[in-house]
Image 1 (tube, rainbow, N blue to C red):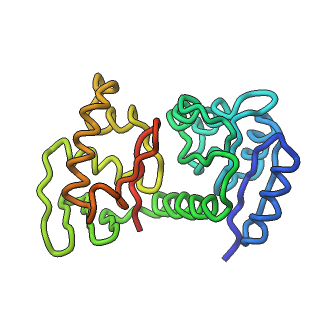
Image 2: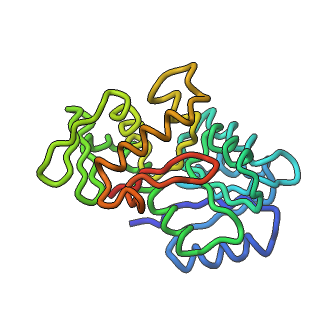
Image 3: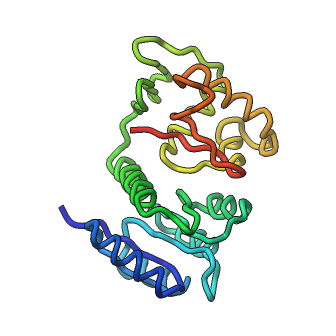
Length: 229
């Protein structure tokens, strides 16, 4: 099996070197770019299988790079940024980023996020399995059925719509706005309080311990992530 091609986009030489050495040690084929325009050129010349993208680039910012990539490719994009501003993360995710990791970061966590993103991309490319499993929870998207262990779980239409959208983007960070639009339609983008109620209800029905969720995780200030196999 050939090594997955990773495009690392960061203007700091030390960070590029750290990622190059670490990712190659873990079996990845790494290409680097120090600016947004170089990243777009590199992606077009040799399409990567995943992009690690810094937001603070010297020419065009990472959000614009992500937006322009999304004009022609579905390659997974993981934002790697020192920006702690939640709005910057939300903007990147709304423009098509799949995930974000804040600097300073844990290499094992980054590698795990990469594996999830690559696995999700492979499923989309080969026709995703309509049945998604997470622990003892099974979500059959084709038949609109949800089970926890042997038991069928009854969900309201809105609860199912929220869970379905999270399942379709399993492993990815979904912003509040994306989830509200995807599950409830346009005009509900500001109904975050209502969304929290639906998520809390889903956790009570699906989690072993709703107070310490392991299936539907909160990304503070941004949105939610569904952890799945």
